[in-house]
Length: 572
Image (cartoon, rainbow, N blue to C red; front, side):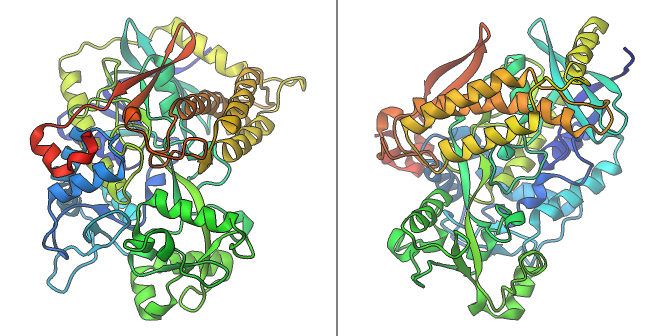
């Protein structure tokens, strides 16, 4: 069976913010770089990060500094986050923003001409550098323009189906282009996974179609270690109406600019749940509050709550939140300058992922790196809004630099024909004119409904035990799915491949959630409602002898100079 082959120094799988920043860093270090996109270059889920980039510049609140950003990150992660990653993020975020500005990003400005910063949930000070409510889009636009002016080879609309681990070292990846169906083998001295999160494993999510967790699953199958797989962030505010838009993100920037939450009784209920921080408390706190109000029967006609920013006036809203105005006007027929928005929690971000070294972003497999949402460690049990865009810039750059340096001292190992032929045969085994195979679309719908019903905002052992049994049944049947047609633009085939990855990740998520017998951050159990100091551990997962193995690692204590900043509670 025919295929094409390419060789490079650094292979970057994923073309969102983290992938493009990594590719740019590697190219600037004189490496031959190939970047792969499941979609098209410039169309990445990063654009959905609308609110801003967290960086302690002190342009609006002069008291802000990296120490406060570090403290907020650790505390809102409920002490499960990697202290070194949090330190790197807090210290390097301002320069990451200035670096983005130097390559063309245009930010909103204060009257003095400094980069404007807004308030966001969980942040002590106004810290988010922003471009209205289109910050992620501006980040992608700036990086894409730079990439196109570098000697970087881009493959778009390409699905990677396997990573090749030969003798304990990553040799590259194999996949096929959707528009032609032709297989391609990419041999690389270093490989970077930057494929984003797994939000599409749930039915109600703000994530775009690409976010199926492919990179995380492929890394696990290749021998990498995962961590914190129970930690899924439910953004408090997703659209609820019309049904076709259910789950689509309503940026936290609305609340950052003064938006207030009301139930159907016209009560500003966050005054009860969080009297001090109100609507700007951490996302897990606000999401649980909204969930509780809906469960108590205080929800809106369409099963949400109201988010109101009409009091700020039309001119302010059109200037600060033009994207939100257009989104509700075009898709819901709602004028947010005059009417309230209906919102409810939606799966938004994944705090878990591939375990990496904080300094280099290398995984447990030599030659394999990871950066961005697919990599775990930074956010612990709950992510601060705005930290994701800072993360992809900072750790994307580090991954690119270190992968490039590794490539300079590594010999190229071309992927063998026998390996490629086996993978082509495996992928094509999903194609059949017969009708006796499992339907991937029905299995995927069942999987997503199971995740929504059994591993949502509030969890318990009974639901999760039932859920993991269903997932294991789906996982078993996924290998027997069949679809008609050929390789080119076959949505059914892509669904078969994604389902296989999503099923193994769902099992990991259930195993981790069952293991953690406490409530911490985004992980809330009504059968273990309190936080327990003995669970100040990271839950690690890997594949051993064909089965998923679960282990614990005690959260490392930060050095004394950082422990003082965080406070004594974290290490009591």
